[in-house]
Length: 326
Image 1 (cartoon, rainbow, N blue to C red):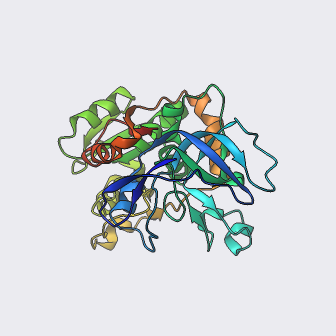
Image 2 (image 1 turned 60 degrees about the vertical axis):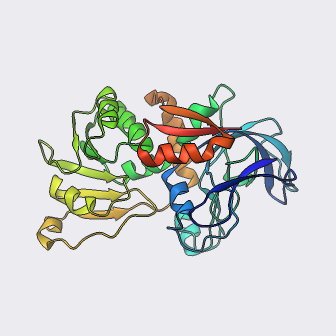
Image 3 (image 1 turned 45 degrees about the vertical axis):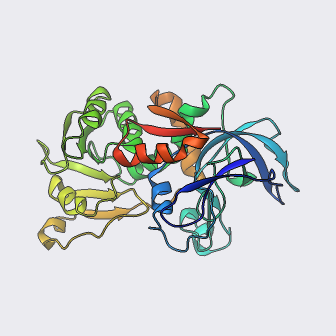
């Protein structure tokens, strides 16, 4: 197999040829068809997440076909198409797992962070944490749904039944959430980096009711704001934009420090929440919604050897998502 491997914080990724991995008990080997690049991959590469074990193969938005089964795996079958998301293992025993909150497991495993991921031709995954996918699924179009879609969905669900939704950072996750909001009859207010005309055009194309940069107040108070950009200064900005009783939901795994702000911004029963990882129930409910909502992802394809270019494109801002194909 070929893999793009991170040996030191900051990169670069090094292409290596390795023996095809052998699945252990409960595992499957997957031939990768596509793996999208996620903001979390950048946090891994930049050393912004704790306890990084090097070397590591990044990538956790994986679509592929099963090539081999480890001991104890009865299904899915060899040849089946599956998705591999960020959450790759939970203990199943802690208080969080026992209460349906496996995303908060005390001893989790994460694809492309604690175990090798999908910037490769092959990857191992625990069978129980893969997602069955349709034979008709387009691997490139589906790959961003495995994290940008799933985390976006969980973030939106935490906003409850809010009708007016602000999306801060209009990238891979927001462009999927915007389509869900349109399907559900919610109004979207899109906030982009100043001068990011491509992102603003994409937001308008996806039916946003209003588009502006992150420093501009919306024309009406929001019921909720979802923050996908890893910029802590957006939290007080979003609090200013939401109405009393409104929620600000931070959807990223890492964010720069949140500056001090006056209590008056929080008063009025406004809430600031974070999203941590995802659950398998999130995956089931989201992938049932995808065909109903008619979600279409915007993607730009890179070859596996072009992983550095794909990462650079993600850093600079790309319409939708960058996707690696072996």
